[in-house]
Image 1 (cartoon, rainbow, N blue to C red):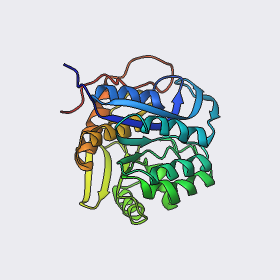
Image 2: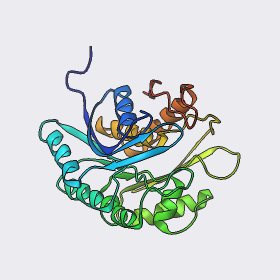
Image 3: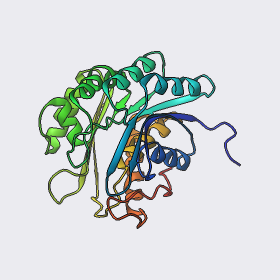
Image 4: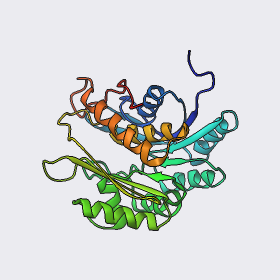
Length: 267
């Protein structure tokens, strides 16, 4: 029988019309992990697997109003933030999170996995000064972590140093993801937190189904925190879920294709 009262997770993030990333990816991931997903929409995109055609930003106060509506009615157990847009929206969400005592997983969405900027200097500053210190875990890719610390990251040593530096600024846990790091070897992600440092090595999957990987990863971690798992355990299982989802991705779209969200999570 289904859980009569499944854990609830709130995603504060953008909408992807192609269904592969953003809140659509989060909701699919939550469903697969047995938690109930809710959303506060921060921006809307017209996009497909080839690219983004247009972005419309939601008023920061309406983002917060959506979140409050959920929080006042549902027993939210964890929050995930993703693409928030401008600095004003990031600060508004951070102000809301300051009122709450909940685990928060934050996917910066400041630089794409290919190195393209997705946030201006104001957004980066707002993230670093207000949102990152409030998060339980931030999950920057190597380009985002590099932008936050002001240098290019290529080696595992670079990842470790950047994660330590970001944690020193106030974030409890930092996961730097490096599936796209230079070279032909395995993919490596580095997690740094109060219990020390862990390196996750996993095979690099040569498939075009990588749209929404950061969204799915952070959502899977949030889902697992909502059921009481520790950050290291949640991260390890979330990475395995995303690798399997890449391998199972459907052959739809002519560009960067979506994940196969229906794969079984690691028990």
